[in-house]
Amino acid sequence: MKILLVDDTKTDRLIMSTYLSKMGHDVVLAENGVQAVSTYKEVMPDLLVMDVIMPEMDGYEAAQNIRKMSDEWIPIIFLSARIKSEDIIKGIEAGGDDYLTKPIDHRVLAAKMKAMQRIAEMRHKLIDATSELQSVNKELKELVNLDGLTRLANRRYLDEFLKKEISRAIRHKLPITVILADVDHFKTYNDNYGHLAGDDCLKAIAHALKQVCRRPTDLVARYGGEEFAIILPDTQVENSMFMAEKLRSVIEALGVTHDYSTTSNVVTMSLGVCSLVPEINSSTEELLKKADDALYSAKKAGRNQAKSAS
Amino acid sequence: MRDATISEQTVETDSSVDFEILKNMRKAMGVLFVDIVDAFFEQSASYLVELEEAFSSSEIQVMERIFHSLASSSASFGANKLSTMARDLEYRIRDSGSSVASEEICSLQKEYLVVEKILKTFLVENIQ
Image (tube, rainbow over the protein chains, first blue to last red):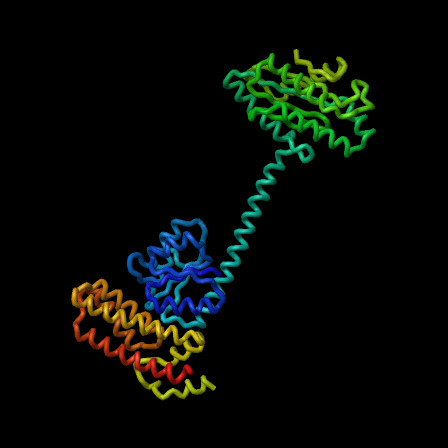
């Protein structure tokens, strides 16, 4: 363990540090409470062994300062020649965990160090486990909202996001655009090129769509199989068609060969656009339905095109 | 062999030093024991000088601190009588805020010399 040993009496410091070093610990020394506080910050020890009565700042005050200063808990052992009940209470209240009587019996010291070592190890394990848990939690939180294949937002997140954005648009009387985009003849693509190629195609499309919708407020989500939803808050009706066309052309420009498409020799997309200033009773379902109807029209009109909801 | 020699110590009856503590420490410290005792001599000597200075300038806080350190370090070497004397003086200053008499400092110095002599003898007899 890295131990910070604080004692104003040179001989005591020497005795204690010799004992501790012989036990295999790494000892850092301080001569008083003020030094203890500043050295603590520098070395971040696993354990603090500190005399109670010292000039300038006594052990109790130093312990209080250290506890206040750091969120991390490390054991503090007080050293004292006289230990009365009130000293123990005062020590614990100041943030101490144990007492060692002076003069130090090296066997007692060795036993206490063993106990403290156990605590330090448990504390390290706990810190590791906590940080692992935090990162797993963070990952989980992201996963809950993400589509595993495309790393786009998933349907769950889309519904939440759209609901919020509609409310915001209603409150500020702002337009909102919902685009539903469906890959043309994707079933035949999958059937002929295989599911792995199908997955790669969807990933490439997801990436391309995200490149077009670069405002931090825009959202591209995977709506279902080969269907994507794009939400563009605060986007005027006329701009929405421009954006939809851009999305369409970007997918076509990817140039993913699709020899089994009856629309083109590359992968293409049909898009349905619903752009409006929502009313007080507008819902996510309503906007998605309008976009879906427009998508149906685009499909019916020959695919590889964008249609606006009437 | 050496431990047997220690247990046969004849000066154990001397009330100034508890040889059990001393022997235990020697055993635990090994070769470093001599250095630690030397450090104790060196520090105690400078404490005694500081103590006289503090006494003549009536700096009772400084005296209290010196008594505290002396009490603590001498106890580590089993010098219980010296430790108790220093501790009593320390507490008296802390509790009453009054100074100590020059005779008391004299007694403390004398006791230190006794301890020093015992420790030196111990070193000669036990560390070759």
